[in-house]
Length: 495
Image (cartoon, rainbow, N blue to C red):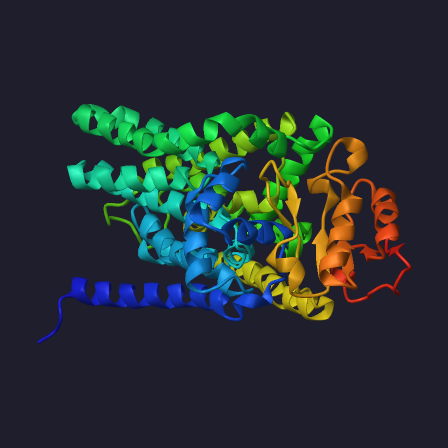
């Protein structure tokens, strides 16, 4: 007796999903301690070493909501704060993002294009990097993706259970990243034309999101000015900010993201070509399907416009938010774009699937090879960087008013402390007392290499502050950390 076709297809599709998910898990979990630690990770762990009340007090004065740090606090006190263990929460949430991407893509694409989208997320260098980083960016991405999937289910059948699930997921993503408010806005715009079938249920769903977030908003409101001072601290011309935003966004979202926010424009161009070709072919030949698509008559074409609208809306709204904040002095780095990796991957897969014949298979191969290349760069070169530099300790920033900068667990475990003065400024700029920080580091850790990144704005001030403390200073790109300076002779490497 032969099994029904639908059962065979579901079984095969399930195993393909498992295989893609396992690939994503392997790239995120193998040698989890291999990625070089960062100052921001030091801040995350430093904030969670004490009691939960202390962690919430620290986070309330910063630019991030508390949910990720509550999970981080639970992990630190259950397993420990050592390098690798501190990334378990991020790695787990980054792994979950892969199958959720496939589930979302299935709702308005073929099984093959959905698996391609999942593969792109599994291989995304930006997603891998942030999944191996003890920071909330990948958590915000995964929760936003989960909320979008639950919204699509609720749009099919707005039952009380589905709407409640969406409300909880949407509140969770907001309590992980304030920027996810743009996701809620896009969701609301998508729901608006359809909510009149069950208006009260939808209103209660969105009201529930606000009520779940309200307690934290009441806690954080008195400290909003301090968080604003942290977020809007850069002194770069508006035009240069917007140019940098466009450059980083283009590279990061086309797989050109490489180690430590450096970018490969040539790879970006190569990867973008098959996507543009798919968009063009889909416009001039709407009836054609290729070997990767094969979805004619499967009933999903009707939901594609809504799905594509959601994905494009997320892109436009999120990039618009960062463009606005960048224009008025806000900080922006590539990892902020992590929530857009899955929407971009799905759009890529849908665009490539429109190419004729086997051309879409070739285009998919170009995409996968391009993203794989930069993923290898993130995994291999970063491991070599960490081994060479012997980074064993990092400076943690604690934003309590009583001690704005403290040397915590990280500075007591080794000889290396990393400092990026761009984050804090110098005492001459009304910022923090660098000399005092250096002296404290020397007294607690003995002979110390202080590594300052080459993006600082005032290197001479750092060198002058370090000399009296006896701290050895090396200033230069993070990749040259393998070259320690001679004791007592601070010097700068590079420009």
